[in-house]
Image (cartoon, rainbow, N blue to C red; front, side, top):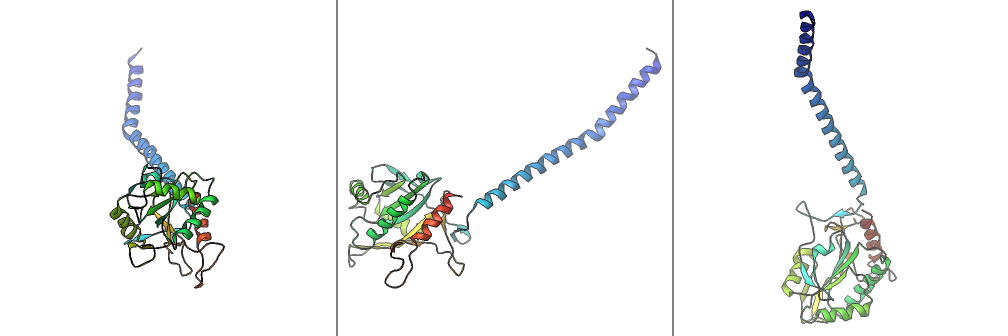
Length: 249
């Protein structure tokens, strides 16, 4: 091999070296930027898909923060410890009641039984019932109550426990009124409203005709009644519709 051929190889090698120094980093950058763009594009698409899956039900907020179910831990009718984590991934309805209630509780739980039966084929639907008379409503008492009403959903927990914790959960956690009152029939008074919770533990509701969240659903008036004596409309049918929406999210 002569010197001229050697010089040719050296020249070609030098050109390749210069090309690598000048252009390869730029190509790598462009590929990297392209990957990032594609990743961002995929993220945007995923966010768009998730957004379209959300129903028209609004999140209930306090000071701009979405209200979520507070942490809780109580004993259910089977003597098992139940926490808010047991409801993760489930759509469920919240109520506060007591088994010896002579007024609104029987109506509320009859409506909840109807809702239970409507969604009997959905494993991700449940109910959380908290007694406001835990001293009387032991797990055994709650078990009998559940059997008498026809509670069959394994995700329907009737819970008892520390009275102060239950009242704090009702009045501060959900803003659903509950109190002892010896002057009223039954010795306790409480709201007849239900709260609706989505699979991620957020309180959700539909809007009223003025565009404001209704926040809670009336639990006392049945679908069959349609209205009470004061002309107030039932909301059980609306609650059923909205449960279905959340189950589809």
